[in-house]
Image (tube, rainbow, N blue to C red):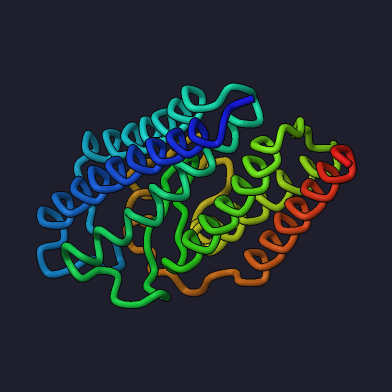
Amino acid sequence: MQGALSYQKTIVWVILYSVGMAFLESAVVIYLREIYYPYGFDFPLVPIDPHIAITEIGREAATLLMLLAVGIIAGRSRIQRFAYFLLSFAVWDIFYYIFLKALIGWPESWMTMDVLFLIPTTWVGPVIAPLIISLSMILLFSVIIYHEHRGRKVKFSALTWILLILGSMDLILAFIWDYSSYMLQYHTLNQLLSFSDTGAILDTAYAYIPRSFNWFLFVLGLIIIITGIITGGRNIRNEGS
């Protein structure tokens, strides 16, 4: 069992690593906006060079790999690695927006729409949405580490994992809902998956302006995840008592 000091050091270093990553991420975004959005970021998106788009997708994949790697290095068991991944992801996401706000005064408000992710398709939503998710990730991290620190073996039930996965899928659906429904108005699913007419698809994508955010799906997914966290915490306490 790790001592309290060991846990504290690990948490501090994971946080520092994630804050550093957040600054690097925000710096890259600031450079891109200086090039493509010199008068301020807004929709519709400005067409970018194909090699830049590919690089961006690669950067996002690399970011996930780096966050996953620090979780694996920091944790001593599978559940600890999962917990530290959650912490690193949440801190990175929160400080990413903190640095953007401090450096360029963006976003203008909590409800400012942003492109959040590009894998496997475009995710769009208000800035407050990923920040809320980050807080739920910190909550789940805290539940796991709290019990691990007290020597309890954390092992979530199948029900808990099902709730966490279903809730996460619901949140992803909320983020891609508006963009995907927009694209499907102009192209079939087969065309989008096969890239049979890449030029036309890109023209449609660059004309996209967010119309709404599916708050119903978002809140539903969040409720399912919180239920999973509560269920998992109760199971751990019952097994440890």
